[in-house]
Length: 186
Length: 212
View 1 (cartoon, helix red, strand yellow):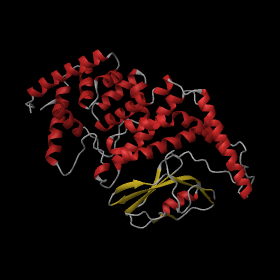
View 2 (cartoon, chains in turn yellow, cyan):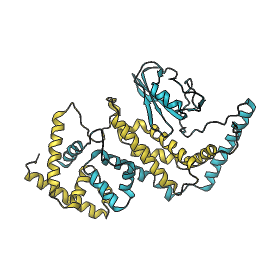
View 3 (cartoon, helix red, strand yellow):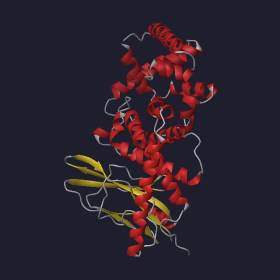
View 4 (tube, chains in turn yellow, brown):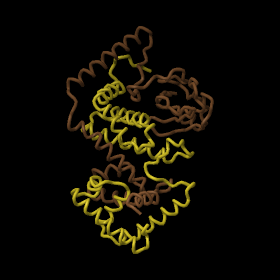
């Protein structure tokens, strides 16, 4: 079998050179973006996520001749790598160390059944009440309850900030009334 | 009940079970932000009723915002060329060194090297090793203060192949299934998570190739 000589152009060598070039340009930005976007509980996994993104980039550069829109491509790679990491952390079979819990959003906790029961009750009531809202208001208010801000809601449902704000806040007022009719006031 | 409390309980109540049938794929999450309107609406409807997918969409939105900069402010061509020239010069130096030492095998690509990462010596197999048969165990130098180690093994696509149980020894035997997978050949990565009285840390991502 023929051995490759150092310095001789190879598919791997070319991919590595392009990766160096790519990361020279976008690497620091990738790291900052992953650090900023990671849920707090994954802050210690930023290195892992960044490394995964680098591996995926390297594989892509090895397989493809050109990347038409590097920023867009990097964004897609970073999103898939980060979401995979979030899902792995969430699915981790054993109870993680306290500082590794995905606690950005409240999660079910067997040690607090009262809270779980209250969450189920409220969620069922919200579902019933939301079913009485107009489609647009329902969509906006549920996204609001999931923690999205007005700009994010506008991005997800389309339209202007003003429209998203009106839908969310009018929807929330409708929801409050509907919850009150169901006896959920506190 | 104020809005924050209502939101907190709703997010808790809409957290999906571990098996997430029907949840958004990463591609659908990307489409939720920049895809056609019908894809965004479908994703928005799901995210409204699934706090896990909602959280992942927020992660993607954060990355989108964080990575928007390069398209508006491209790096200067001069700087890119200088970096490329430096990389070529370093590569040529390494090639000369390899020739002088009789090592004709090209250096393995190192896509996983972070700029600030330290090299981890004393691992078996050594980082970057090219093996003709699958290792049956992984080992590393003991770390002061460590109380347990845990190893994760990944394939070239970053998919988790195997994860060892936590143990106090700086060595772990791979499962027969993992060895069988390694024996098929390819590039593999592994990482050690260290727990100690002072907290935890992780090794750099270590690599070996198996070419039977």
